[in-house]
Amino acid sequence: MPASAARPRRSVLYMPGSNSRALEKARDIPADSLILDLEDAVAPDAKAEARQQVCDAVKAGGYGRREIVIRANGLDTPWGLDDLKAAVAAGPDAILVPKINTPADVDRAEAAMKQAGADASIALWCMIETPLALLNIQAIAAKAIAPDARMTVWVMGTNDIAKELRCAHTPERLPMMTSLGLSLLAARAYGIVILDGVYNDIKEEAGFAAMCEQGRDLGFDGKTLIHPSQVGPCNMIFSPDAETVAFARKTIEAFALPENKGKGVLKVEGRMVEILHAEIAERTVAIADAIEEMAKSA
Image 1: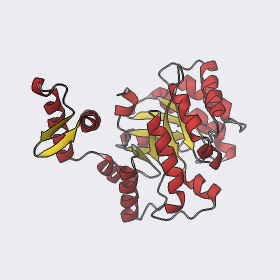
Image 2 (image 1 turned 90 degrees about the vertical axis):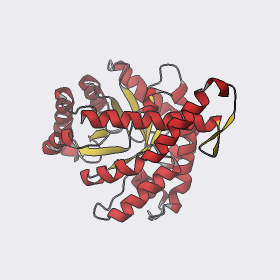
Image 3 (image 1 turned 120 degrees about the vertical axis):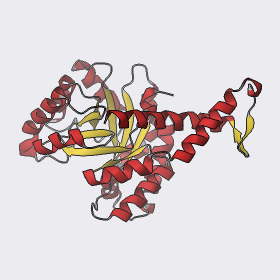
Image 4 (image 1 turned 60 degrees about the vertical axis):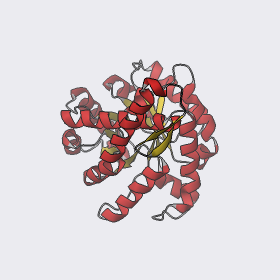
């Protein structure tokens, strides 16, 4: 399993790059990943100041084991390339580029990162948020297996998808289920981590929990968030429960026994499990172990 896939990304919190207090507070929020945002959360006349502020915060560190991502402005905007260059110099774990519509956009972002001198460890995250991206989704996904590819994670921009489709953003999300499903299929086909979009009503706790559960059940690796109060519930919902982890460990142990070598089906605690369940179990245990390690160092 790729290291990127085993890293917990249950909760991925957007933090406004123009708010220095928020950037400081983020060091203590138990989110798995933080997106320091230079795009939607920052007014045009504050872009340059926010860029400097975010890059200074990343260089200063102090975020522990949290994954740090800088969201740049789109590469076709007046700020995009400057954001990307400054982000590369700051050295985050990843740079998130919005409005990825075609495979050529992935090439362009990766080329710009390379030209800016990005270390190989800095990944490219991509926003999937337009009808054109969804029509090109398999070709975009295929860029993840190109030589020296940086693209490892997709973030669903569900607010933008609803806007572009002119569809209702209902609690069940039926109007955008095709968009979510196509993206999930492509991500899984090419080994990309995929994160669900945000939930806008901060005070509606039951609705938020229901959408987290829906995203988890659909197959998303985690969810992007807009408020620290959403982190705890999101972490809980996207974490494998103790019973599931215990059974996963027993499944792995059973297939590892010498007498079971070469077998495709076994009985574990009265349940029939196939070799594919052992592969699922390995990922479950890897995620559970990584979550435990993060909790120890929090």
